[in-house]
Length: 478
Image (cartoon, rainbow, N blue to C red):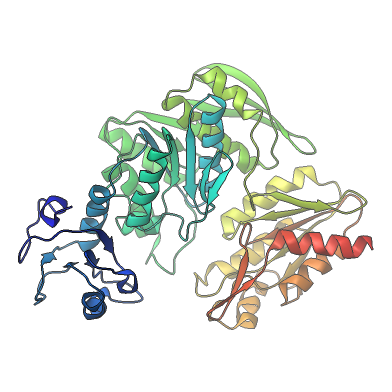
């Protein structure tokens, strides 16, 4: 495709060129590629322009003021231009596209929406933290919201596969870095906003505004939005969307359009009373945890706003199944004590997780968890305090220490739970937790969820909480 066809309204400094691909990693550049030299927080793509040229780059996209000998597109916002070019070079997306944002609940909500669509007979897919899911097919992804090129290649491929409905996670990083700016959005959803990613965002206002971009800039003013209004940020966002004239579906315990009236926990399910547009529905949701009710309700609202009739959508709620690493049952002891694995890695996420498990636990609730390195350090003692408040016994261990000293991370967590047991090795901590379980107890392993590796230094060591739990159960049974 000609470069001049990809870049309107910008112009080329130099002759037109035939473009075969676009890359922001100079190592992936091949003959005919457009190299996007993007300034970043870790590396500056402009430092790799010569390497890209040596690999065959046909043109360069970057910030203004560069002196280059080949076709050059100067953009005041090269990330935005990069996304728009990707949408044109890899054109095509499913007819219905829903984007879901918020701190917690994105992965479950988009998967539940996919399941409701599938129940309604639609060809549906979803993607985000857990990869791309279409029926029984699964493809991994490296980011919650993929790089713009990967994003549009994914949408293009799903379209070729016949997918008509797709739900995707929209992370604050992806929104702030304009990865979604070339996507045509049908409807959007918001779950909640709590402390997270403050290693990237300077403050909560920047974090909220990044999330809000999905609604204020990327979702059309005539498109519906489903907002969980249980917290102050959901209410704030609803007012912003109302000022735009958008159709707002307020959902949750405080929802006006879809309201959770009552939840009755059972051993492995929940009986929920919902009031949808004034009509009462009773559903047995085959999932554990109050937060899963909120995720299911958001998916219900988004399904209805994308063409699924309410009776079909309600029926689908009774058949939902959870996603990997989200309150996943790793196994049970011979006495029936469950081991649950969950991705909760924020103060709010851990609080919701433990409060959700408590009604299903008659005996002791034991938790094994840690905090990640090179991430927001302020949440470590707060998460420790949450664990100490809700659990009967706390074991603090390593999560993904990355380049930080693991002992220092554990020390920070222990400030919030000084009576906790400290076991640095995660596998040993899991075994210790399982060894303590009595007949009516429950073990919660939090922080890593679906992850298949532990990041120590610059290396990723194979590690899976579910597999470690099952191995420990076998050892205990033997």
